[in-house]
Image (tube, rainbow, N blue to C red; front, side, top):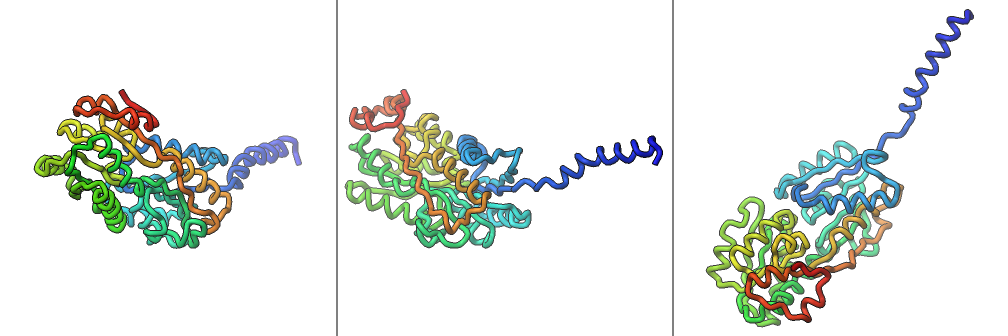
Length: 328
């Protein structure tokens, strides 16, 4: 072989090495992330989820890809969004919010699912038990549904003269969960001697009429129930409650920071981080059936004293002392 031809052969082989090496690299695993609300307002939770992934060495865009799907408050869109993720053969589905988790279980029967939400996963039928989930689901429950009666107690402590109160629920946020939420808060209202009225709102009808109805009822306080839609609309709810002079309590810090009176519930950043940790474990080969459902143990209490003053309320020092954060 002539020297010139030899150089061509060797040069061609060297040029092909990067292509061959690239072809041999395994494709990135793809996570399907689905939520019944919109991305607006969820950036802190997404950051916490990514942090949980990174603790096990998975970094979005480097060695794992994430396909995000948002139902924008329309739970009827979830089956189609999930069916698309199934067709794309994602490695694992992360279903955050109760409607997303239930829809995922119905559609993705073989793909591993990690859920996050405030629902009772046994009561809602997601898993057989917390310790032994069975099937292809496991996840994290953040306890913000089961503490709804405590929100009413906090409201009563701050506004003891209010005898008529209301509970705002999203009937599209999974009917069985909404009913359980209503039942638990009604039981707490009965013990406190309060008259409780249940009001409905969702992405279709918004909050038009809710605060007008509160005025008609002469309600002295409002407990805002669990809903991904309510969470995204935390700021609007806070502004409406303040404008209509309604003492209100919800789950999130965002609500209180926006001018809402009080917030009490499980730490969403903690539960989303744990969701990321579990997702990473499944990517590494663990089976959902072998991973007990985790309960995010942190429950946080927030109070906005500036709002309390605007509403003419004097927060007792015993209540302020129990707060994880006081906004003044």
